[in-house]
Length: 425
Ligand code: F0G
Image (cartoon, rainbow, N blue to C red; front, side, top):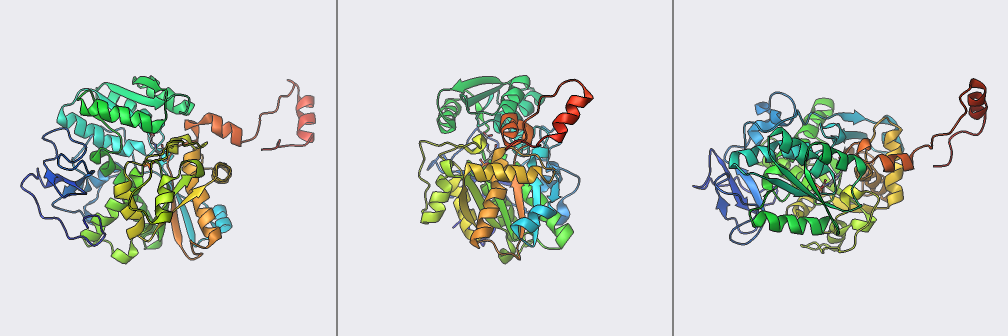
């Protein structure tokens, strides 16, 4: 199987351009990377992956941020706003409370537009320039649209975003708007938006920059490479487990690919690959359902709902790449309630780390799996937090303390301070 951890290094096909090509994960058909716009396999419609003749080693990486990993990417540089190099925070109280050997938070909300999407866009928009396409487009629960708008405008390209009406957090719409995207609010959920954008892309109306685009996932691989380098520096070992929120399962697929390439390059022992552990909200958990049932395919959920609007997704399009990742690494997937997500958002905030609800799902999932005994107390774990608190100010305000009105005099302020503090959350 081409997506197994122990797959042989691929033979280099004639279509390779400078040692880079696209390969179908289903039928193995290969394509030149930059000769035409292509998102899926011409032969069977399967998902495509970028493949390399030369796989890089840790020694090849230099500099900071996503482009530190240029040797693991399809281009030498892209359209950049200095993405990547995000913090890997220590959280001693949370670590002790959840009860694991080590817990670190990889806070992707610290990227330029406040989410991990920037890592994919610096590569994806760079490829769009290489291909010479005009309009860029995506469907989005918000963060992709913010990143596409920013990177598209930086690259001097037109951008179009389709959003589920009424279900996108305020900060994200504000970003897409100010960065100059044309914003279409669709009377339907994210999955319906993606269906439409795919049809627009197939009709040649726009270049698709959702995570179906294999180049975007290359940029997102760098999350995994940074986590591994951070753990190697601090613990002289890679993490036992990486826990991450799952929507379209793009990150799950991207991290798994990063690890497979390191195994193939002889840089990482197959037995040491971190267990990929996906977390979804209970109201939008088709991946969890598939993992729990041992299914090879994910059933599309038509009705999805969660406070974590970023992962309000019923049809995880990267499941064929991500399911093998969860299984081959010995990971799992778990669903958490909206209440548990908000609790985890407060826990992180209590350590000074501000995240949006979807991001907190990783910590909520870890807590649940630790309580169930699926995660052992001797594990070293990295939780991915994917987006910044300010992305969804309404959710943050609802989860936090209410402001208290006071008169404009010190006596009145003192009287209020003397009264019962902290209204109920
Ligand atoms: N966390 C956040 C904050 C997200 O915005 C997303 C996806 C995910 C997690 C899920 O990541 O798809 O790689 O499993 N947001 C997309 C968007 C769908 O349009 O912004 P995944």
